[in-house]
Image 1 (cartoon, rainbow, N blue to C red):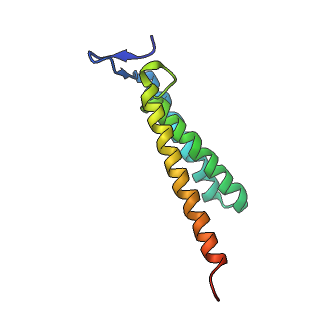
Image 2: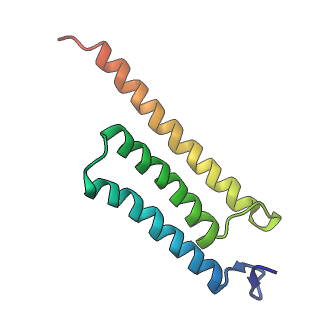
Image 3: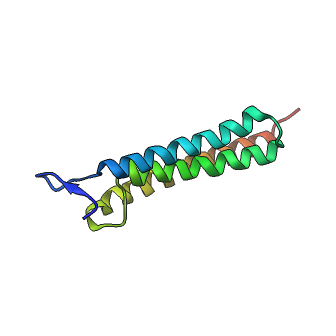
Length: 108
């Protein structure tokens, strides 16, 4: 089995999982940092790479360190996380929409 369980039944990772997660996190941090520091890339490419590596970094953190997966034990944690992401998305999109509407209707 890939997880160690304590007396309460909570899954904990082993050293191999933490090491793989740490190495992936370091790589996903070094890639955009190196691209920005070298300075030889366009702004659009840099923003794209930073956004993509940030999303992958979040997924690595969730899987390797928070042990979120599709197992029945983690279902409520995953549902709570998805709900949190949806609430944040609604707040951000709604705020931008309102600010855009106010800006277009402002008197100059």
